[in-house]
Length: 524
Image (cartoon, rainbow, N blue to C red; front, side):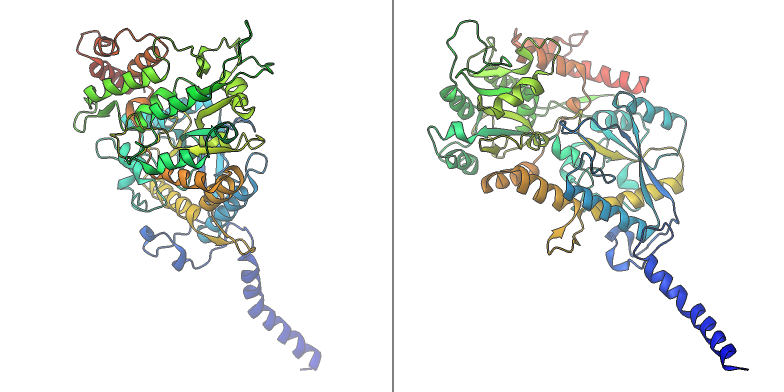
């Protein structure tokens, strides 16, 4: 055999031996569906070291559509969204999704449905036993409705999901248990429920006309100490002190073109009444543990007192006061008063306090004056802890549809747990900084870019550590919402008598709420 022939054979044998190793090594760095690596040391604990390979399968998520760049409710934590998402969040989402693709061969896919059609679409899919989607991502109201009608799987019963782990929000899980079942997945995997959390902003430029800003932070930290803590009486006192009524006749300081010197102490929308009560642990209803058609009464006497306190705080029978402006009391002309007037007023130093959502903080980055962040105030100084709640119609959660496909349910629970786990897992971003979706949202977007002082960072930690939920408000039950709405908008007319007479048979609002639950279940 000549030397050339021997060389050729050697090269062929060498290529056959080495090329697969070379290709595999290269492919471990790309996004090919078939790329899998040994991930035993980087799996969620509930996987017990079992790395399931799904070979190119898609994890299909049904969600609502995005809104627009100047809204706080866009879904930027599921697939990379360079148009609407912050750079740090976009990068961390991409890193997480690529890791799931490398480890398990699974691609994350999002299918958007018009917001008004999402609940109907999800219900129809469940009725048809359609398994096109691994999970739904719904607001809590619609997720609760599906759970009550038996269309969702109990996440506690799913093999791979462990809601006791720190990447899940166990506080929400406990608040929203239905007959000992946990149907809703919220936590590090989702940022929108954090965006939907109610907070108080205060204008430091205005406040520092009389006091150091540390004074108000110390009130919060003092809790039930000598100062009595951060209460609505204290908030109202400051709001009245710093309001400045414009004396020019015929001029309203919420006028879009207003350039005078008037300002309010507090600007809100009426839903703040709900947030104040729930944040102080005055939950209105809970579902009966044994009867899925019945609402169990909870703390009615305390609730009456809480509503009366909040009613007076929101203006009482004379809601149009010089220190307080409620968005619903403005002649809107069809416009969104909250976005068109309330938020710009705060940015223009025309209100001291502004009660809004965490997501709003990212929408006022251009505000020139400094502002601080506070938890919702306590109703009185007998309450020990500060609490905060969310706006239920915007807070998203993950749910697994019950469509009779056991292998699909196992796949859904496996990847959903992985999605949550890797959302909180830190990775090296090659800049010496630790990174993850959780880190990107809290530390980069919220604390570094939106928050303007260290005290507000401490306040945010306090806010997110203690969130409280009310199932009747999350379900948007009309009986209780109509009573609260009418009461807070100046139609008190004895809250207690109204509260007790809502039910047609005169047995109180809990009977009316029970009837609403029956209707929800029957219509779904």
